[in-house]
Image (tube, rainbow, N blue to C red; front, side, top):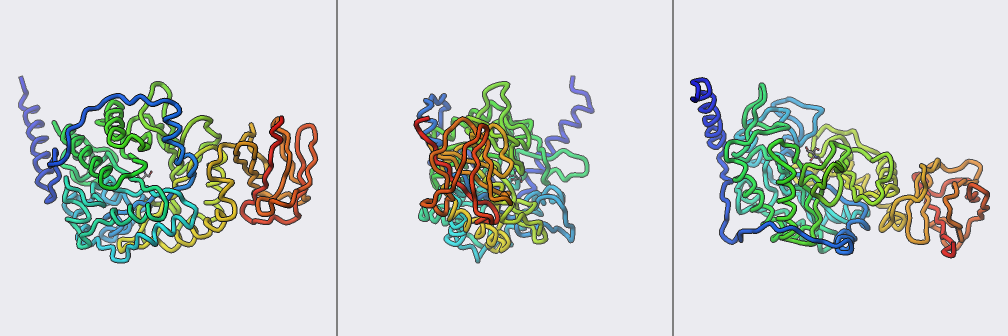
Length: 476
Ligand code: FHN
């Protein structure tokens, strides 16, 4: 027998749900849009060779641009005079902004200075091989022309043009891979609400609750959006996020993984489609098989290589993903180059973020640093692209190493003052040693029992990291 109290709670829930639906002037629930063909989830047999072929471009790319862009760039980290140390794209959460108020930012999102060719040029010139942009972040706003939501850049903003279309076309024109970020957590979709002390039920929050019967509707909505994203823009990677909700399960992740791979078998999907991720360390747990093609450490680099595992470390250039006008804690270009080398030496990819402004510009401090990284990559790119992890069992005291068949690249951060670089032996014989920048000029090297001593110039040719090449003696 439903007690009076339970009845009241039930009513409250329904009232809240109704209030939430009514609180947004933007409709989203148009599942089964005409032209969306129903879909059967089947298992996806894939041989090791097929997987290696599918992952090859991504493994060789090593370096990509992450772009967090959306309505949160309008307040740029400030709401009603309130600022926060927290990340800019979470302003709807930390400023407790109700859905209806947050939607008003759309009326001020007008990136007239957005220039797709310039953005892609900045990424390409930095040595980046792919671009991952937020098609929809936690705030639920679609940065592309969605046919199942009018809370998007075409229907809800004065800009009223599909800027993703422009960026996708330009990315491909300049020879980079175009990829999408898509958030499973959605603070705007009427299926979800917030039940946290002091929080407006329609504001942002780390976790949301699913109203009764809402999940099916929301999953159908996500699938409609993912179908239109894949069929309209042909992304090479789907980078999911926001999966930590307790209403999202590994089974949901496996279903969504199959759904997306069926739409585009060659696509690559990160491990945040399911529940495998172990927090910010980002790699999947091993207690069972988890969906996803690669691990996603965030703001950190694994201490050691992860042989055989595909992973990609994503990182901000300052301390926010989405644009904040006052966040000037920028990493130096040296630090970024060091991270890229460190990550490649451990067999991973580096996805480095930019947070453009609401009027469509990549912040100048990012542009400057990416240009400096590009200068280093123009000279040393071959020691990063298409390499695999360092063969050395322990960390090299002077830097890092990356490998290619028959060749080792030493990335020297700490140049030996005595002009003698001591490389611990690792069981291979070295045929030639030379600076990457002067391949015809051999450096003298002496093999001792446990090391190879290389005679190097007294001053480091590159103040950030000098690459020395060791061609191996293939006979042994
Ligand atoms: O909450 C998001 C955050 O806004 C940002 O998108 C990062 C990027 O990897 N991922 C989540 C935090 O883990």
